[in-house]
Length: 407
Image (cartoon, rainbow, N blue to C red; front, side):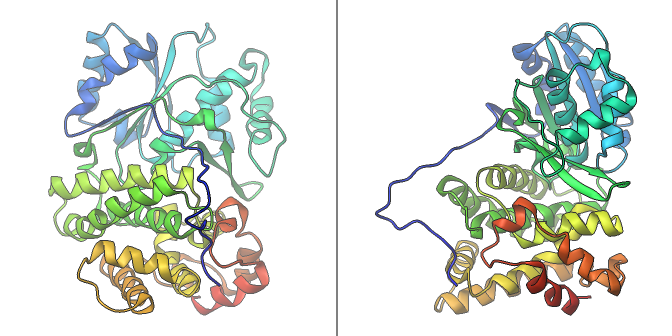
């Protein structure tokens, strides 16, 4: 089965969603005051304890807002990947006055940015003043695709995303991933209106990340670059961006894991993460992400770790169907690559397998706590938008032996 591509003679037609303002470079977090001033005059801050509350960058960020005359307050902090309860709690705590002129600034990894996007969207799409805490949980759930029936129809409050990890690309995506441990699901709140209005990517902000976090986040970005390139819904502009960003990432991640102070390598990974967010938003993903979401629900596996575990598996499953695309990626990474498409594609799969081994991520589902008798559940719940983009069509019956082989 070949990966699906439009024939060259067909006319092109596609949508392209991007943050309107992107500022990339070391030290550019100091521009936050000026950027917020373009969008409003009041800030709700959302972040993590390390990425915001205890961050050495916080005084500079707050000083930039103060110089611009912008008032700010912390309205929510993240504790792992956002849940329905966390989003509802954040909404219950937002100020009751008019939201006119309010800008939501997210400082942190994908969890903080997704929490901020959900809060910004629901602040304008539901009546917070009349809602109880229980009502708000129902409101959040009812806006999740595949669970509820309501959509984001009004513009959210403007979001300015400041990522402090290089992985999820949430700063460029149109969705917020929200889980519900009680009901055992992880779903997206999704709308083209949810793409952040501005992004500040300052690679220096990731300097405090632990090695394991850097590895998992980096492999998440690499997974997104690859899956968006080979997926059946891949679009031309994201594919062109992937061909530029992926070689940088594959060269930079081993350097960064060996030396966390390598700022050039960190910048390359920050760039790759942003491009991966643009690519997945405008094209799609595949099997690795389809399984990763369910694995996170079943075992609590961090998203980046789950993606890193599943990426080599997904590449082997899709190797024949996506042979031409995988060969193109190998030739982008190694311009001296020789041989036919099958040879180059095999070399690329081997390259990724070696990178995952060097990063020290889990290689088997049993290593992240999956019980063997839960493989059927994992296969049954590994679906959604990500799986629909996979080059090879996989229903639960076909997925089950694949997962069993890597248990």
